[in-house]
Length: 147
Image (cartoon, rainbow, N blue to C red; front, top):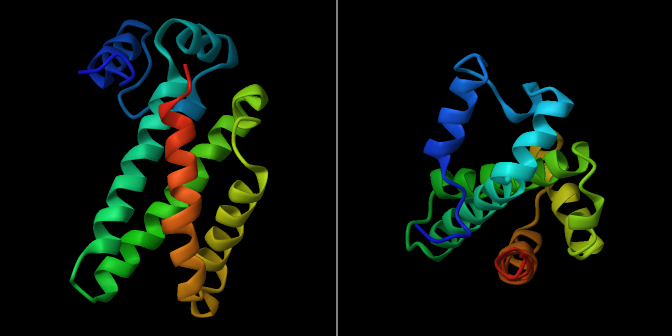
């Protein structure tokens, strides 16, 4: 495993050692515990890995020769996941990290995410294409170059 990858097994062990429940999410961790884990074990890296995983899934689905609602749904759900991970960073007041990303890219992902969730029939394929071919590669590049 590369140094940039967050070790999920290590994170799971940390949660066990801190007497958290098995079904804990990052939002369930108290602020002082969150700060401790962030400094020591890199929750930001964990969230970034989730974003990169979603980008990889979207790219695979987008380049797939399969033309189906399942592939489309996979792309849409992973766009939502990318937005949710950025929201976790915002909720954790990681503004210094968020400033590294183009605010217009993040805003566009949020707009498309809202269409997916609330106005599914109004999604335009050209917008999905822009996200897949322009926005997500920008985000991926920034994440891969963050120390």
